[in-house]
Length: 221
Image (cartoon, rainbow, N blue to C red; front, side, top):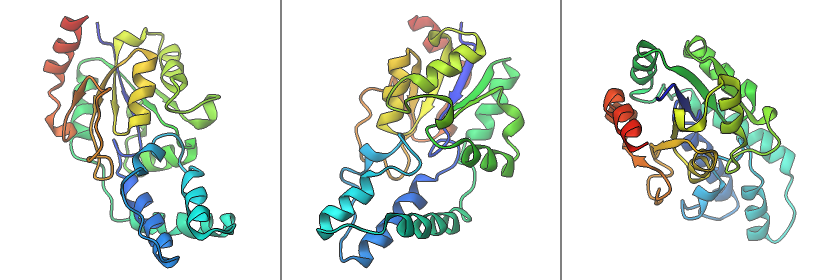
């Protein structure tokens, strides 16, 4: 029996991925390079500030960069862009329907706890989640299964009793490696990537009919 829904945060609850990409894109353009989406997807979902873009920029320039200065400026720009973002379509309806079914709700995010909780509080979603696992809570973030395994331990359930909602390849791999059924909801940045490891792919959480989804998962088991 399905007992829990586990949400990734970045790109599933709030589209932070687009501001993240755009902030890096602007920095690359300053150095005379166009940052394309090709290859970008592999960097998403494993950290809120992966080293890959810094490494890639240094490779393009052929010299070291002032990483901390770029980190600070890029982060500030990302926050500016995030001001225009709202909770993604369908998030609140799935949360409320899940609660009406008596399901436990959790977040499994590779980002830092303060990043996740500050946004959840801003949108008045914090109280819905019984468990929030973030980068500080595990040794290895996505694509390793540690975050999902930690959620399952905290909620006292087996992985087959939970459904994960993810938007990146690293997130999908983490959920599947932990043994959860995984629904992929690609965001504008990951939409061009194949999501072959996911059990189901939907364009939006608005497309998720929870009763039908639970019935499908339980019948498959």
